Length: 152
Picture (tube, rainbow, N blue to C red):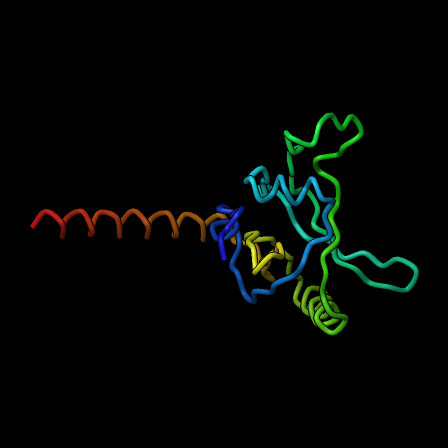
């Protein structure tokens, strides 16, 4: 499972509760661009939309650069919303958790599973500023301890 894109800030900004996996609906040139590493999950999130009685999940804010070998694409939108492929039971479970507990859905990484592109996302709760400060402090202390133990 080679990892193609990673949302590094997700673990720092959010407390991750449950992780899920979903497929993505992409155009052919977008698949090639993602496999080439031309994707950014920074600032992206997952939204829930109801359309004609069907509830669907969409990846919003992910940037996929145009594939260089595909030629000119003047009307291509890099930040278009991309549909996620999930079972109805998973979607209803996610909606229930999100509405009941006031949580959000955050994309974590995109990777390949055999020949398919998969998105791993998590139900998350936003961290407060003091929680982030504690995480930075703990990380610095651990780093100092590692350097001290290496010297001896």
